[in-house]
Image (cartoon, rainbow, N blue to C red):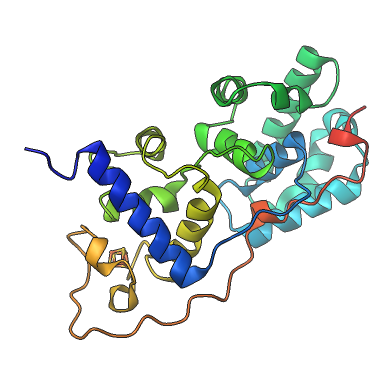
Length: 260
Ligand code: SF4
């Protein structure tokens, strides 16, 4: 029997979900000038386990303190820690950043990730995830937000919402959901879908107390814990968009890539 696990049915359902989110939240557009991949990688490392505002503050402070990534690589670790402490876990993140910069310099003889532009998505994923502390989500963010590839990153929030909607049956981790969603996200919709799912997860489909009464995806949702709708309430406006870090990583004013 062909059930919802059928790939075609999942693709159709995903198309419906993308369309409903675009109707409700709008169609997000990527900015013209994108940050270089190394800036994006460092910003994404800083975004781990904190909110977007704190990690943006940490990233901005790091960029103000050091002119190039080479200066960050050579700085005493305690100095890097003090620059990024507003993002939390500063000790661990400073180590990760300096290690990543060291490995890149060993590999390319420069502080750069520009060579990624010539590589396909799988090659980029493989290269980035070989760096210590860089997972699939971080690598996928670099692909989407810096290289403008049609790749759908899955963090814990996107994983939660995809699971509740029944788009990734049987997937227990964001990594499994990332693999499952590869073949069902409509072409050229990765950016829109990812961005809107983050907004939707923040505003309505929160980890605790999801606001099911207002949910435009109520009929698509397979979550057993969804709160029963007593009345068909109107969808409330969700269009006041939150600040999103990875859309606000500044385009480098240094040489491309902040290279030395
Ligand atoms: S009905 Fe509730 S749990 Fe389901 S997607 Fe909507 S907000 Fe999330």
